Length: 218
DNA sequence: GCGACAG
DNA sequence: ATCTTGTCGC
Image (cartoon, rainbow, N blue to C red; front, side, top):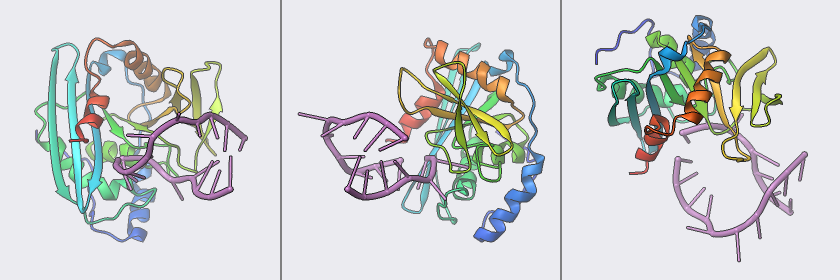
């Protein structure tokens, strides 16, 4: 699929330049509601490194059309992993993988953080802003810039930073480790709650996010 | 008692 | 991400 870039910048940069880019592009993040009807076709992205390569799995699952598309990709990375700079490590490979998808979801679930990031510009926000598409971040752990705040729902916490709420933490099946969902781009907290509802309720179809993560084991 | 900064 | 394969948590 031909990707349309709303913004672009070099990826082969120094750590200092990367931080500058994050501080510049973070202002392009838009917080907006996503309706449930816009959550029927999801694309999930997961990536990990192997030596100097990034392995990417992308899955698009359309609940209405009842289709699932799976792509795996491998691409060299030039930027080593540093906490807070995951996008510079993985995004080029992820973008290459997205190119190979025939269908892109209404919203992209990205393995990593969105606004739950020291500069409010994690991988999910970064990808969303570049392509100007709705994204949600989904990560296993919090970065130190953020913390949890209990909600009325015992199975859910708010994810906050010094400025306010940036996401939700979801405790699945009484697990002590929550999944950290955060706003990426063109989504909001309500979108996350809607997504959580659909995600936990819909066991009929393969969960694209879990599928993408599983694919990285091969 | 040792570590706890996404992947 | 991975190595850890019975044990939790401030």
